[in-house]
Image 1 (cartoon, rainbow over the protein chains, first blue to last red):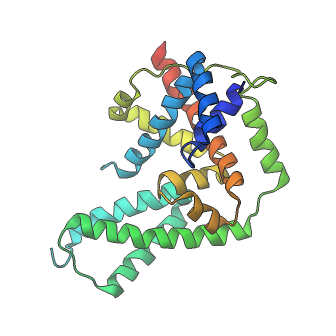
Image 2 (image 1 turned 90 degrees about the vertical axis):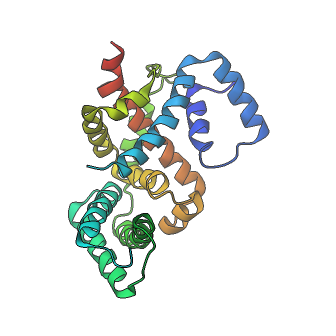
Length: 59
Length: 188
């Protein structure tokens, strides 16, 4: 069973490499039960978008 | 547009400056990189069918200039054991000994709304400044310059797993800061 620390690391790594099958399964299992890590996952998407918006904004 | 006008140039110049500052976190270095970019562009004297083509051509040159600066800097300032320890301490503080979140990440609702709020960007900028320098650098190379993992590792002469550790720290730091300073209050 993965800990939240490990899950947060895998979620970050998923943006860098293709995760293995076992990694994906254990991630899914954890995310089914952990609201905090689910929020973290969405937050990673958001900060990626936000930084590019920041880069490209006009003012 | 065969030749860019002064106005085009001013506009694209301020874009390039923001781009370079974001990555280099140093106004003077950013200014230098942009000047060199514009000079190099002038020397090459290419022509363009439109403004956006012109802009992305310049961004391409700027990326190379920025990578040169980073390469030089990273040779000068290799990481001290202290810095690494303090970064890893910061991350460890976010988790309990068994690896649970010290404080569960909260639901940010519809965070895209914040992108329209000027105050959000002030906080966002502040949080970028608060990221540890080295982790911020790799994070920007990936997310702002959109270099591949392989490119970042090659430029900085670090391993993939090293890069992943740094990106993980960078992302934890940024989201933690935004949650404390912005989304925490918004949720209240």
